[in-house]
Image (cartoon, rainbow, N blue to C red; front, top):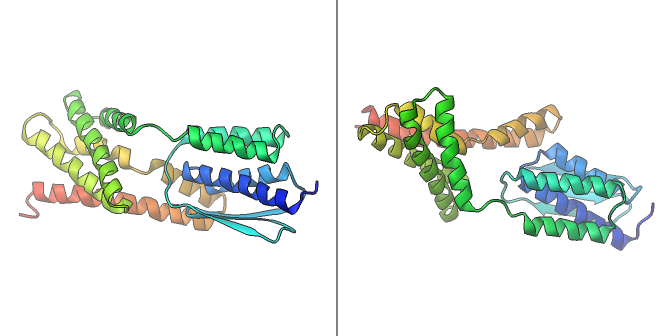
Length: 256
């Protein structure tokens, strides 16, 4: 079907908005490209071209003298938003929405689904820290120290990231805080195993989704995106390890 230039530009805005929200919500790059392509194919017969990396999206439609770029500055994990956009994409493929209606629906998803409040994220991080400790064969006496260290550690990460917009430093300092709290618990006799308390408490900071997406993108042939995400995951792991290493070195006399 043929679209006017104005309609094609509007369709590009719809596809880019959907791609931007997917990428910011933690979707793999090949999923973003596939969704944008399917959305566009529901309204035009012209070929579309998209290039998605973890930090940007380029999208164009044949016979339209315009190519649009969206810069992605921050990414998190919001699988509920990914599900909503995928559902909308399927509805668009069935012809249930006009281009304007689809854009309005995407704006509603963007405004109504901003993720969980920070307090809930901190509570989830605390509970998961205690559960990870048990999963790694920790003792129940260390459950509460891991819960507290994990909750405070995630709070510290959020605060440091708010102050310094460099994720590496925020993760490193948060790991340092976790290590110090775990050490205090063990020295005070309120915890038994320093290792398992630290391991359980840092797990909310570990980029599990990022590592999974990096592997999936590499397998799908998106080498640039896969390698970029792999390097980002490595830097996060390095930051966490650095923070904990300072505490362990001080604990076992390496820095004295």
